[in-house]
Length: 125
Image 1 (spheres, rainbow, N blue to C red):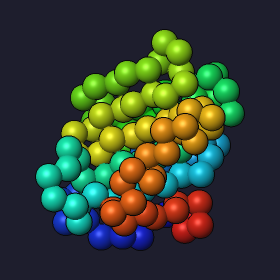
Image 2 (cartoon, rainbow, N blue to C red):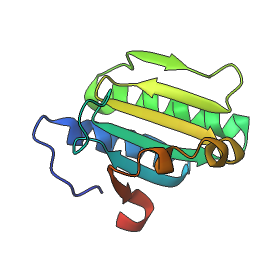
Image 3 (cartoon, rainbow, N blue to C red):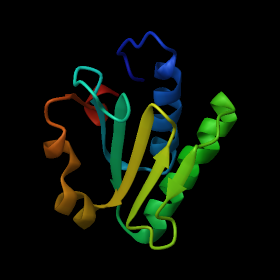
């Protein structure tokens, strides 16, 4: 699946998150490695999008269920389920952003954090 080394065991969590996204056919999965930037709120952003609020909701629930199943780790915080345009799942050092495509393009997080190492997951599988 994802072949980049992380010393603190986060790689397993990243793989579980990506597995959850892939189970519900999340689109354009990106891992932004923020460890090379000083003073960031976390080490990784995992970003993807869905085609509707129902799809976004399903992807986010799949991530939570898959991470619980494989890592026995609940999200520390979750936000955005009510409108399901942008759902954020906080796993402490990894933040998962599940967008509807127009909202993803509007906020363009990949450009905001372009100093990080951007890994296109779809290309790696």
